[in-house]
Every structure is written in structure tokens, then in C-alpha cells.
Amino acid sequence: METSLPILSLSAAALAGAAAAFPKIQARLALSRAKHRSLTGHSKMSKMVARMVPHYEFDIDAFFCSDGAPKDVAMQRQDGFFRLAGLYQDRYPKGRALTAEVTERISDLQFTETYRVPFQYSRLVREHLGTSAFVQASSGVTVTDVDGNVSYDLTGSYGVNIFGNDFYKECIAEGEKRAQALGPVLGPYHPIIADNVKRLCELSGLDEVSFHMSGTEAVMQAVRLARYHTKRTHLVRFAGSYHGWWGEVQPGVGNPVSPHETYTLADMSEKTLHVLRTRKDIACVLVNPLQALHPNSNAPGDSALVDSSRSSKYDRAAYTEWLKKLREVCTERGVVLIFDEVFVGFRLAAGGAQEYFGVKADMATYGKSLAGGLPIGVVCGRKDLMRRFRDDRPADICFARGTFNSHPYVMTAMDEFLSRLASPNFRSIYNGLDETWNGRAKALNDRLAAQDLPVRVGNISSIWTVYYTEPSRYNWMLQYYLRAEGLALSWVGTGRLIFTLNYTDADFAEVSDRFVAAAEKMKRDGWWWHKEGLTNKNIKRQILK
Picture 1 (cartoon, one colour):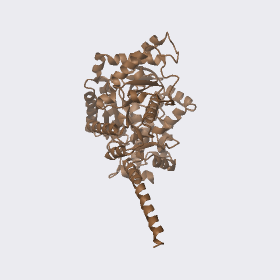
Picture 2: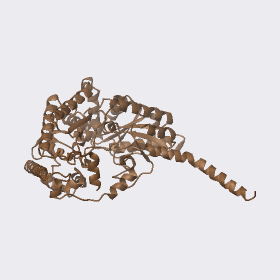
Picture 3: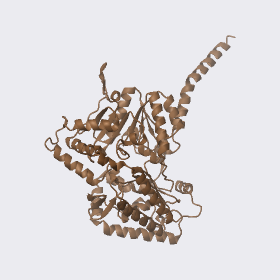
Picture 4: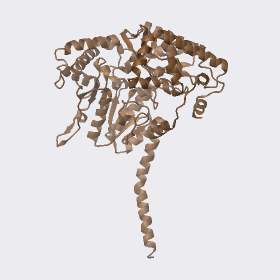
């Protein structure tokens, strides 16, 4: 009897410990299940895999037949490649020379020039299909490079340019005149800020505003304020979403340090809602509405086009329903819902994504489109969330400032932008906007299908992505055929085409003709040949070997 008591005590203690640990284990399992199954949802694993991938590249013999193409197809591709190379050499002599000169001293260019295509093909592409990084003029929906080549602009200045280059030039020019008397005086506010703040609160439906120097900084401040007021530690972001390049919101590849207070969960998932309902450490949820175009997938770029698995899955009704559920859970649990509209703000509707999807956020962030194209970041939020100090604890503050956060030239350009946006005549640009751009996407897809070209486009209004319908290792070549037809693309290639809203039907018809011509030439040169029975899974297995 005496010997059994210690054993019983130990058993009881073990059971008590297990009972206490069980809820934590359950919570941890629920969190793991809420992460997206791909590498985009598992930041630590994605970094580990990235470190394991060795560098290798194809020489000129293997470059054109890396998918097992027969000799005649490889020669067809090689002829097409060097035909393009000759065209690029003749068309961009000044731009290529200037780009080569400055690339040695601009680290940004070294990165973008290297990562336009999958790394196995990069060296040969850089040597022969080098592009110009320089443009010297813009007009309407076109840009002119330093060699005098005029191209239709499909870059949209990475989302900044919503209403057209001429519109923003006017905002900047008029703003400069109004700021000239004060000049670059920093610290005191230019009086025009009073009008800007009033309009921003009306557009966002929120109470207060703070100004910052970039969209990235605006998101940083929104998250910081959410943590300060909720007294919780963690933020939730969704797999694949982009919120700037600061550490907390880029937990995978690209960030040398893994943040420990970020949960990367699956978009449009009931398991994610369960985590939000049950955990007590979540301060805020970050939503980038652009993810509606490709939920749980990273921002598409041609450097990752190793096969044809990229797709577009935009379903406005389904994404709206998801945001409403998210809003409900965040309200129930006291979690701050932040809409990061740095990219899409004022493109989908005058009131941004909140108006477009019919869902109210607690805080919203905006970027450079708001200031006529000049650098700016803005946070709009509920009054109780924007306060940076506590009345009852004078030493407990949430500090944030910036030297250029309310530059007079930026503020006057912003007022020009907001004044135009407030005009009923100008706002008519949003009438039937989705129908217009959905119709244009459908018309282009119909042409591509009719001509048996394995390319399609998906869109959320005027933001498009290109995807491919047949397995191929060479889809990334399309960007070079498109540029040869006079279509200006950003460094991510066909991953994202961003149209300005001043595109007329005639402008778009010309773009459509050029797009189809580029695809026809790429097909003619044999890049879309593939073996019978080839699948995207086969391609990935071949690459892994």
C-alpha cells in the first residue's frame, strides 16, 4: 500500500499535466491545419527548400530542348530566339547600353535583370534578350523609351497609375504651383492638409488619418497600432499576399530572419476562421484584396513559370462572402481587420475595396496612387485605434513619425487627385467598370481560343494575369514576344498586366491585336511543342531530378 501511493501520485500528476497540455496541443494542430498546404503557407519550410536548391543553368545545346524536344523543334526555337535577339539589338541600342552601364552600380537592376525568367535559362536570356530599363516620355496610354520606341503601357507603374499618365502629370504640375510658396518646409503642415483629411475620412468611412512615407510604412503603422490597442502580439496574413517588404509580413523566402509573431494562414478557409475564433493572441488580420485574383498563391511573375500551373480564380461573390465572414469573426473576437489597399485603392471603386466588396474594415492603408504618383503612405482608421498614447498611462505610447510624411508638394498633389475624384463627372469613370474590363478579357480569350493558342487572361477589373492552358517549360518566353510587338511590361513579365482606366476601346483593340500576334509568333517558333501525355506534374518531377 505504501509503495503504490507514489505511483498513483505520479500517475495523477501525469494525467493532470496531459490534461493541461491538451488544449495547447489542440490549438497548435488547428493552427497547422489552417495553414495553406503549399510552400506559400509554410514560411520556414519554403526557406529551407530555397536553401537546398542548387544553381545550374542550361548551355546553348540544352537550352532549347530542356523538355525533351526533338532536334527539329529545338532548331526552330533557336532560330526564333536569335531572330528576337537581332530585333532587340537593333531596336534598343541606347537603352541596352545605358542599362548595362548602370546595372553594375544599381543593385535593384541586378536583381530584376536576373529574375525575369527561371534561373536555369537566365544567363543566355540576359546575354541576348537584354531589355532597356529606361523610358523618357509618356502620353495617353503609351510610353517612349530612350531609343524612341513607342509602346502601349501595361505596367500601370505597379498599380500606382490608375487614371493615366497625363492625369497624374497634371496633378503633380498643379500641386507644384500651389506648394511653391512654402517650398520644402517640413514639420509644420501645409493648410491643404485639412481638405485632404476630410476627403480621406469620407472616402474610407473611417475617423482619423495618419501620413507616412510609403505604403510599406503605412502597413507597418497599422499593425503597430493594432498590437498597441489590443495588447496582443500576433498578426495574421494570408498565404501568397504581399504587404510590402518589411520583415513581419514577408516571413518566407526573401527575408533573412523568420518572424515569430506572424501566422500565415489559408485564404477562404473555414479552418482559418476557427483559428481566429479560438486563439487569444491575434491582434489583427491583414487583407490584400488583390488576392481575390489568385487566392493562396504568390504574386505571379515569369521567373517562377516553370510549368503551366499558374491560374486565375477570381470569384467576386465568393470572395465577398469570405470577407463578410472574416469581418464577423474579427468583430466577435476583437481582432482588428486591416484592408491593405496600397495596390488596389481607388482602382476598383471611388471608396476602394471596402465599397467594392461591401465590407467595412477597422483600418485601411493607401499608397502612391493617392498623391498623384508621388511617394506617400496613408493609414485611415477608427478613432479608438488611431490614438498613439493612453490618457491614464502617460509613458505608454505608440511612437511613429517620419521626416517626409507630409511633404507640401505631396500634399498639394494629393489634393489635386482627391478634388478630381470628388467630381461627379470624373466618378462616371467607374460606371460599368467591371463590365467593360470583363468584356475586354473575354473578347481576348475568345480570339486566343479561336486561333488555338494556349494562352488565356484572368482579371479583377483592370488588373490582369496571363495563364497557360497546355504544359510547357517555356511560357516565360511570351514576355519577349510581347515586348517585340510594342507592349511595355514590368519586370515580372506576363504575371501582371495593369491597365490604366483611360484605355479606350480603340486602344485596347490595338493591344489585343499585338497580344495575339505575339502568341502566334511564339507558337510558330515551336515554344509550345510538348510530348503527348506531358503534364505539369511530370515537368516538376523532371526539374526535381
